Length: 452
Image 1 (cartoon, rainbow, N blue to C red):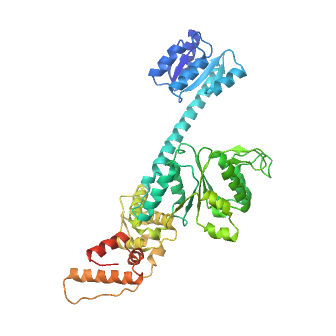
Image 2: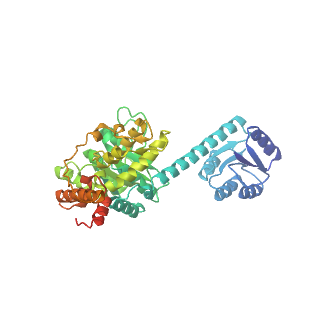
Image 3: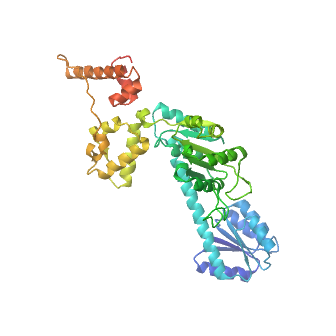
């Protein structure tokens, strides 16, 4: 690390510099606060060790000036006048720590290790957050369907607000991924996003998880616990499967949304929280309201902005893009050469209904990549559910005269006409029945000058 020592006592400067150089640190020195600040303006500095009392300016002044230059520089104050008041003042002003003379070199070494560890953690956390932000940007979503384009546009418009959001959709449609995308597109992106699965916890544990608890508030509560609302302060809290919230927790959550305050379990003190809430469910909350199992007032608080994620079967135009993306991803992760699907395997993947939605599609591709013996994925590499797809009886349209191309065109037109009749002219459903994308069907209709 690059360490700057600021001390008007030459012997002290040289002693500390010699010790730190033996520890393999890059060390510079300055005989006054003014010289030290001038050095920090022009050079890379990680840590400043500064005497508290110097003729030209105090160590506190050095601290404030250094932090104004670069808040990431860690400052340690050194003084012979060690008092609690001085230490508290220094820490409030942004000092990392405080040492008294004569300096215990072992203590200094431990302190520098703490600084190095903290700097590494801060750097690693920043790197991971940048990776997450890049991964979950809305423009990184993989889609070409009109349905998902509308979802992305809606999410983009609401990201900068603090409005609560309710994401609805079947299991596996990507509700948490969308929630993360909204968070990382918002002004809260540098603060935490905390996720809780409401269906995975019992009633008692869920309350403690959300709101925290005080020591002794229930059996086993041997220490105070900070809840997810406090952890997500100034950030985003994502509540998945809110349809499973117990009645008592619904009441407490409603109060938090109304007053922006929480109380820990077993506590009686209100704690202010600034949290943007994004919820998700695969259950029909309106039906639950009629049955009395979900509070209507809570629903309206959570449903300020609603986003409905379509199931994969209603956005088949996206399946080819998703297949290519997952195939590339899992080929790289498993150290495989670039892979591709056989025509038969690709046809089955396009025709399948995907009750598990994108999650099922992703797992299917990963399994296929792992099981495939070569670079070509065959139908035998797919789960048995794909190979057991029923083969529909299709009418043939033989033509005794004409070229092969004319016979093929007539056969295609017959199939398309049959599918459109069966689906009352609904192109999306006809395309699903034919095992092609809606865009492909529209192309065929235009090519053959056919009307839906």
